[in-house]
Image (cartoon, rainbow, N blue to C red; front, top):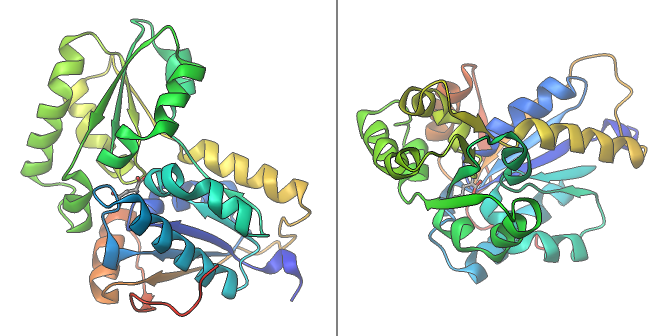
Length: 271
Ligand code: DGL
C-alpha cells in the first residue's frame, strides 16, 4: 500500500472532533480516516496541563503506530497545551486548530465578539495571543463554559439543560451588543442549532472545522500525501472508553451508524 493510501488520524478528547471529521470527509471524500477519542479522560477542559499533555502524546503515538500519514488534532484544548511539543516530537505532518477569532474579527460590525470555550482554552495564552494578533481593536469577550462538553458527551446535546446553560452564558454578551459568537471548542458545533435559536439571525456563529479541512488538504498536497484514489475512503473509530456508549452518542451526533473499537485507557505506545 502506498503511503498516500494511509489514513489521516483525527484526535479529540471525545465527540467534538467528529464535527471536524465531518468537514474533513466533505473536503476530501477519497481519504480514509482513523478517529480516536480519549473518552476515558474527557473532558480535558478541567484537567491540568501535565495530564492533558501526557494523554495527547500517548494517543498521538497510537495513531502513528497505526500508520497515519498525517494527524489532525481536532481539539482546541489539546492544541492549546500540546501542539508545540507534538510538532517537535512527531515526524508526520500535524494540523492543529484554534478558535476562529480571525474570521470573527473580519465579520463583526458592532466590533464585539464572544468566544465560547472550555475553561482551559479560555484561560490559555494561545487564545490571548490570537486576540492580540488578529483582533487588537475589537472587544473580545471570552466565555468559559464548564459543563457543556460533559452534557454533549453524555448524549444530552438536545436537552433542556443545555439550552438553559447556553442562554445564561450568552445573555451578557448579547446584551452588550456582540454580533459574532466563536465556537472555541470542537464539541460546540453540535450545539449550533440551539445557539442560533438563542442569539437570533443577526448574530453570526463561526467555527474552525471547514478552515481546518482546507488547511489539511493544503498540507497533504504540499507533502505529496494526498490520496489518488477515485473511491470513497473509509473511517475507523477508536475510543479509550466504552465502545457501545461511543457508538450510540456518535450515531446521534452524526446521523449515521458508527461502530467503534475500544483500545483501553492505557495504550502501550508513546511518542
Ligand atoms: N473538543 C475539545 C476542544 O475543542 C473539548 C475539550 C474538553 O475535553 O474539554 O477543546
